[in-house]
Length: 368
Image 1 (tube, helix red, strand yellow):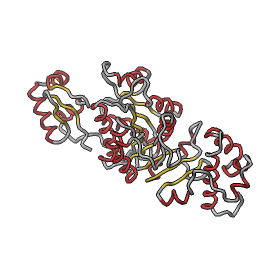
Image 2: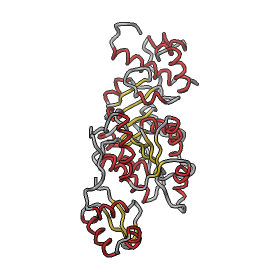
Image 3: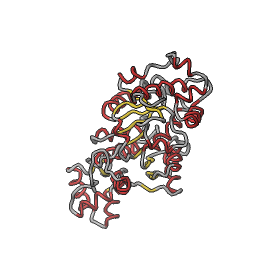
Image 4: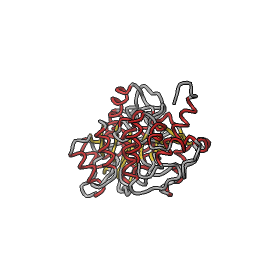
C-alpha cells in the first residue's frame, strides 16, 4: 500500500477490501484468512482474485454500506491485518477476518471472565449467574457472555446491576436485536458495555452462527464459568474452545435430578474446577489478574474477600450457598444450636447478606 499513505486512509482501504472479500462468492471466512495470510493484506488478497481494478475504480461492494456510515452510528470495524484488532482473537486458529464493535472498546483490554450456560435455565441457575455478574463487577472484572436467554442474560444483568462492565458477543449483526425479549438488555450493553460481532451489521441470526460465535467468547475471557448446561449445550462448545486456548474452566455443580446440570457435572468429573457459590470466583480470579499484571477495568489492586462480619456470622455466611438451606441443616453442619443459627441468619438477612426463602430456609446474597 506504499509508504507515506495516511494511516486512517490505509485502514479504510483495508476495511473496504476485506468487505469485498467477504462478499466474494464461495470464498468464505477460511478462504479470506488464507488469502490474507498469504498476501499480507486484504487489498493484496483482493487483487490476487482479479478484482483489484474494479475495486480501485470505486465500485461498491454489493449489499455493504460504507465504513464511514457505520462509524457515524458508532460501529467500529477491525480487520485482522490492522492495528486495533484484538490480539487475543489472533490466538484462535480461525480468527474472524473482520470484527464489528459497538460501545466501549477498552473493555477488551482487562482480563475478563465468561459466564455461560443454558437458555432454559432454572431459577437457581439464573440467580447464580446474576450473582456471579455482580461479584465480578465488584472486583472490576468484565463479564463476557452471549446475550442469549437464560444464563447469558442473567450474567450480563448482574454485571450491570453491580455497576461493572460486560461484553456481549452476538450471533447476528450489531443492528439486529436477538432475542427480541432481550431488547432492553441489548440497549443497556450497547450504552454501558460493548457489543461484538463477526457478522455484517444487518445480518440476521442463524442457528449455525451461535456455535461459531462461542470461540470468540472463549478467546476474550481469561476463564469460563459454566453455570447450567445439559450434555448437548452450546456452552460446552465454548469450553472446548477455551481448553484449546489454555483458559481456566469452572463449573457450578447441580442436582443429579436436574437434566440441565448434566453437562456441568460431567465437566467436574473431567477435571473442571468446582464453583459452589458466587463469591468463590474471587479466589479464582485473583491469581489470573496477578499473572496478567492487572486488576480489572476498575484498576483495583485487591479483590473483596467477603463481608466484614464477626467470626460466627462469617462462618454462617460461608456455609450458605445459592440453593436455600434449612436452619436445622445449617445447625448440623456447624454444630451449633438451631436457635443460635436462626438468630445469626436473621442478622445476616437484616444486613443484606442472606435472604429467607419459604420453609424457613436461607440462601446467600452477595450484596456487592
